[in-house]
Structures are given as C-alpha cells and as structure tokens.
Length: 120
Image 1 (cartoon, helix red, strand yellow):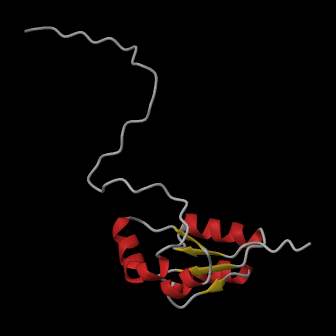
Image 2 (image 1 turned 60 degrees about the horizontal axis):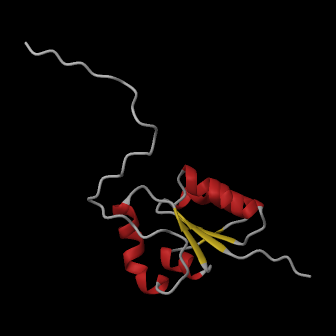
C-alpha cells in the first residue's frame, strides 16, 4: 500500500511560512516554495523543498497552496496576477472579511469592574 503524501506549495517564507514548509517536508509531503526574496528559501530547499521560479509555477505544482504573507497588499500583488491559475482550486480558508471592517472584540466574561463618576 502506498503512503505517498499529497504535494503542497507554500508561498511566503517568513517565520510562519518557513515553519510550515519545513513541517510539510519533514512529514514527507513533496513541497514547492516561492518567496519574493529567493534566498529565504535556502533552508527549506536544503531540507528537500523545491524552489519555484514564480508564484504561477509554485501554484501549478500542487493542489494545495498555503499563502503566508504580510498583508492584503502583498497577497494581492502575488496572487491577483495568477488568479486564473488558482481559479477552481480547493480552498480551506474562510471568506475574507472586508478590509475596512474592524475585528470584533474577543468574547469574554462580562466586566465586573465598577465605575464611579463625580460631578464637579
């Protein structure tokens, strides 16, 4: 019985992307990586990942693409030019929240602090 792991691509190799790519490689997944600064891929390539020449090449290498970039602007700059490559690909992300919407406050117990105001 074959235990071949599914291929995965990681785009963005900051601390989180590098950790994820390393974990995929160590778990036996064929892993393709891409980063705007190619030298950031050296550590995971030394572990067995394959460095793609472009985001499109990286996305085409695997059915699952994990994107770990700084913000929406970086994501847009990398992904919008290759949108057709990604169209129809499975996604495990939630629908994005609007960029202008503030994050809701975290749930927590009701405040037990009391306030006192004094009129002067």
